[in-house]
Length: 291
Ligand SMILES: Cc1cc2nc3c(=O)[nH]c(=O)nc-3n(C[C@H](O)[C@H](O)[C@H](O)COP(=O)(O)OP(=O)(O)OC[C@H]3O[C@@H](n4cnc5c(N)ncnc54)[C@H](O)[C@@H]3O)c2cc1C
Image (cartoon, rainbow, N blue to C red):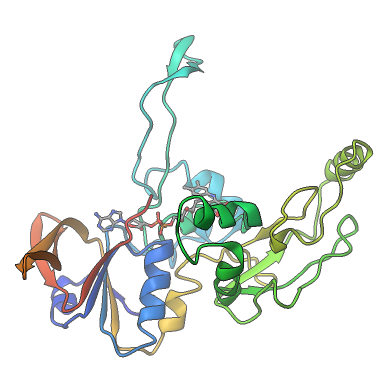
């Protein structure tokens, strides 16, 4: 994939203004947007570029397999859960798998591609309850739209689905779409729900996701290809020489310097194989290494 390398010497031969730790969903979006400027961007990603070589990662159907396969993720698990029964032991203490992508694109390469917005009330609470100015629904909506190129796919059950100006984006890097094929189970299910007073909601992206919805998904409407961070944001950096992503490089620690009584992040120590290296950032270090 464009602008990526596994060669640490090539990576270190360039100067960087910004170093981003994590070439995942958010890290590659940040890197791509920042590289629209003259800033020089370096990204450290612990995993490799499996997306370019493994078709299981392209398609929607692959994610239940890849999310379970340790070659794609970090292998995190929960502590024993006292309120969950472990079927093998026949007693409480079930340990849950918590997959998080360890590859270029991060978890966007192994996730379920559901592209739903929360309710307006929830975003508004980020501002009104938690005091995060600018995180309310109306302030975020332009950014939701900026990231997306939406294609509506009306179906028999959801004939009203359409691209709504002001709600959906049409020029962003992530191609979103809807399911247009439904199994024979869906029809009776939806009709039963309607008989129980649940209504069809054809516009769930407008801040009210309640009701029976045909969920928006991060799947290209024509190629059916997963819209992971490589396929979307990293692709937009093709031809730029101010962004380099080093693969197989695990950040170990942030390096700080002191000035005027304050600490500044000036670089990152990272490991490739058994060897440690340091990369400097003239302006900023951004941690985007997952949840
Ligand atoms: C199985 C599964 C299904 C999901 N389904 C959905 C869904 O349908 N819809 C939805 O909206 N969300 C879904 N999610 C959640 C969504 O994918 C994540 O919220 C999102 O991808 C997180 O983005 P991120 O950039 O924070 O982290 P990630 O995309 O995980 O990226 C973090 C990156 O940092 C790298 N990294 C970590 N530590 C280091 C280090 N020390 N040095 C260098 N690199 C490092 C990782 O390898 C990874 O590539 C799902 C997640 C999973 C795992």
